[in-house]
Length: 238
View 1 (tube, rainbow, N blue to C red):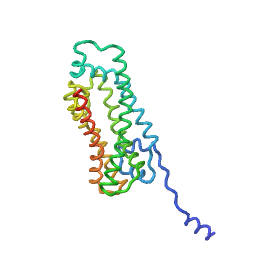
View 2: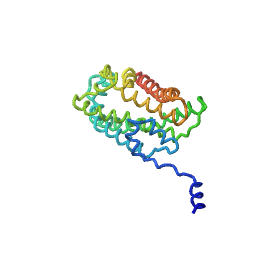
View 3: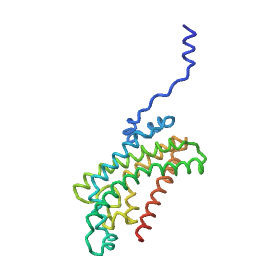
View 4: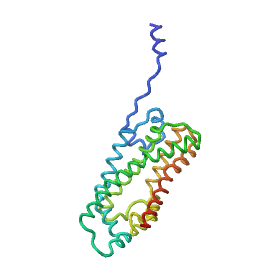
């Protein structure tokens, strides 16, 4: 009996199973605890599916309003030269907005994880896998996606995108592709919350101090914002 007991104690302890679903709410209320669980067991599939659903719902429900604001923007009015947009063109714009917008937001965690891998592994000489970083980005992005769902009823009630918790509403009349609108729309309560949560996750994955994790989060997510603003600025020239 004693020999069996000793043998049992010598066996390696298996890791406690981590539920992908629990992270869908833990990331909001106890991100440090959740990302600690993800350190050795990163999750990607479930958060990606949930993120895709949330994003698609927002674009599908608000698609008509987004297209309407795009058509009323000064840039579009200048292109139309006072002529109404053909129905077929408006339909194509709706599909490109809903499908293209959803795909673009689903690519963002991949790009952010790649940037974090560069800054964290190369510049800061840390060590983390791409899957672990992608897991952090996906759960962090869920905060932003839920924020959009919360704001969506207000958008529909006012029939305008000039509502929400970001500074972009101050210049919404300039159009959704305007560089100033794109830049100010990133100064948002849920975007700040997302960056903080991701910073906590990155500090835990890399074993960095918390401040260094925040810096890495800003370098990764912030660079995506800069690229978005630059793309809007270039697009406004044509």
